[in-house]
Every structure is written in C-alpha cells, then in structure tokens.
Length: 268
Length: 270
Image (cartoon, rainbow over all chains, first blue to last red; front, side, top):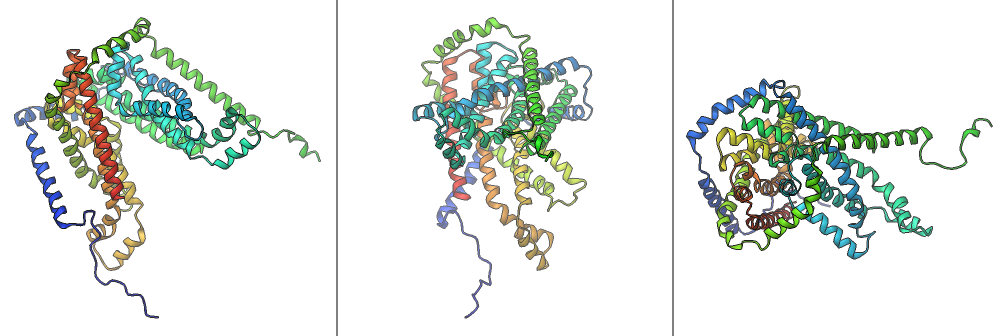
C-alpha cells in the first residue's frame, strides 16, 4: 500500500512530430517560406506615405460621419440591402427545406440523396461574390441579381445543416409514428418536423444575419444594395459618407446579432 | 365539478390564444415578405429576367472549352494569393491575441473600460467583410499585395478574437487557482495556467481561419488588392469567358485543397 508516485519534475508535453530532425526540417521550411513570402510583397513606400493623408481623412470621416449630404443614396442602398436580405432568406429557406429532406440519408432514397448532396456541395463551394458576377451577367445590374445570389448561397447553408440535423433525430419517435402505419408525408410531419423545427428557426435567423453582411459586399460587383453605395462613396473619395455607411452596417449587424440570439433563446 | 368543464375533449398542442398568435406571426411574415419583394423588384427589368436562360447558355458556350494554356500565367497570382492568406492570417493572429485576452472576462485588466473596447473591435472587424476592408485599404495604401494582406489581417481579428476569448473564458479555473496558490505572478499564471489550456484551440482556430482566408483572398483582386482575383477582374473586363473558367477551376481546386489540409491539421491537433 505505497502511495502512488507522482512525477516531481515538469515534463514537456508530447510533440506532434516525434522525430527531432523532422521537426527541425519543418521549422526551417516554415522560415524559408515566410522569407520568400515576405520577399514577394512589394511595398511602394512613397505611395503608402501619400495614402496616409487619405487614411487620416478616412479616420476623421469615421469619427465625424456625414449622414446627411448623401442620405438619399445611403437610404436607397440600405432599403435595397434589407429587402434583398429578407426576401432571399425566405425564398432560400423555402427551397432548401425539400433539398435538406432529400439530402438526409434516413428519409430519402439513395439517388435523391446524391442529387441533393451535390446541389449542396456546388452551392457551398462557390463564393457569393463569384456567383454574383454570374447572376449580374445573366440578369443585369440591380438587386434582383443579388437576391438570386443570396438565395442560392442560403440553400447550401440551410440544406446542409438541416440534413445533418435530420440524420441525427431520435429514431425511436420516428419508429413510433411508423408503427401506426403512417405514410412518408405523415412521418415527416409528425416525427421529424417537431424535432428539427427549433433548430431550423435558429439557423434561419443566423442566415438572415449572414445574408445582410453578404448583401453589403455583392454590391461591389454590381448586385445592388449598400455595397454599391459604399463603392461609389470610396471611388469619389467621400470618406465621411463611407464612414457613415460603415457605421450603419456595424450597427445593423450588432442589432441583428443581439436580437437573433435573444429570439433564439426565447423560441427554444 | 364546474372547474373541469372548460377542458376540451380533444388534446391540442397549443392554446387558442397561442394558435392565434402563431397565425398572426406567420401572416405578418408573409405580408412583410410581399412588401419587401415589391420594393426589391420595383426597378427590375423583367425582360432581362426572361432573357436569362439564353444569356446563361451563351456564357456557358463561351466558357467551354477552357483555355488551358492560360494556366502558366496564373501561377504567379496564385502564389501571391497564398501569400496574402498566410501572411494575413499571421498578422491577424498577432493582433487578435491581445484583443482576446482583453475581452475574456477572467483575464481582462479592466472589465468596465477595456473589455467593451475589445468587444467592439471584435464586432467591428467581424461585421465588415474582407472585400470592404480591401476596398478601403486600396484607396488608402494603394493597390497591391500589402492592401490584401492588411485587409485579411483586419478581418481575421474578429473571428480569431471571438473564438479565442470564448476559449479563454472556458478554461478550467481550478488549474489557475493551483498556480496562483504557489505565489505565481500574473504573467506566470498566464503562461503556465491559461496558455497551455487554450493552445490546441488556438492552433485549430488559426488553421481554420487560414482556410477561410484562402477562400477570401481569391476574390480580393476584384477591388485591386492583388492575387488571382486581379486576373479574374482582367478577364471579366475583356469578357474572356474561356479564361474565366480556367481561373474558377483553379480557385475551386485551391479551396478544396486548403480545406483538406486544414481538416487534416485540425484532426491531428484536437
């Protein structure tokens, strides 16, 4: 009955690479890469020096934002962004529910599963801005292209998370509903839907938040919204208006984040 | 006896009042949707929308076959893109770590003043997309790699800072108390009590952010901040769709590869 012996000296935690030589090689490789990478960055210091004055004006614009002189453009862009956000989130979710159900292995036949999973994969792999470029080329400039872009991006996000969530449901409840002789539609309605609904609402609110952030960006490639207004303001060197737009974006994102977390707590 | 009589014979999920509220909520949502839809499509030219399938077929026809001999020209911009993402991630980490320590409730030196400042930095960095950061920085420090790197770094602060400060707040307090009990100074508590606990999370977050940054740095060139996006912008301006398809395939391959690397590394760490 001797007391268990504890180590009295501190030992180094285990390393990922066991061999010391390998570790050294990796460290040297990292240093060489960093030197090469820093070497490729050409900095035109006179240009940076010239830019400092603009940077100062931008900071001043941020501190003394000018909401009034461009208010018509700002409000127009803001309305476009907000309407685009809401409609694309709603449409995206409505489309992604059947795709999400189809992409759940426990509800869909194999061939439907593969089709839906590939839709999800395509939508997630492409970046919003790149999709926006295509939709602007196809549908012309304006918020409609942005609406389509955001809807498309929403499908990949919601359908994937919804499908993963459906695959994780409690099978006992589904079995119980199946045992009553329920059809497939009844199974989805009474066994699956109540289990995934709170999570779906949470995800929808989260996506609303993301879509607003993205709607501020895709305007840069011509898809409408506040991003277009911001782009114009910076092109005209009107940093006080740009500062005002950025402050509005930050404020809306903050409000969206706090209210959505509050709403999610309330709903669950 | 009379108390029971108002119970209904049929079980229902919600009270009548709850049902009414639910229907009212749905009705309000639909009305809001219709209203927003009308504002959004007010200026839409429906002729272009009807024309879109034909346009899509046209673009698709121009994209195929991809101009493969354009590929060697893309290697230098691709290298630049990787450098923007990597150096930007490093810069972001360097700035995010102090912010995270200021923002965490258990390590912040002043909860009344510095913590709100740190939280505001995190929210501001997160709510402005890297493309907007790049737009501003190109205007301020001129087009080129540096603007892209700084844009990625500034954007990364919020993400890394938020995840890291949550990790710091979740550290095991008993270990820290044990070290405090030995009479350790504040710096020693930090380096022996907190840092070892958050190290795996830290590396996981960094690699994850690097992966996201590769994605984001591919398009920064659209606003002039260097990398493969510059080539994309040039090809878009000349409507060289067969080059655009090569660029997009290369971007897709890079993104998939970086995602795979990041998944492997995170798997090895955590």
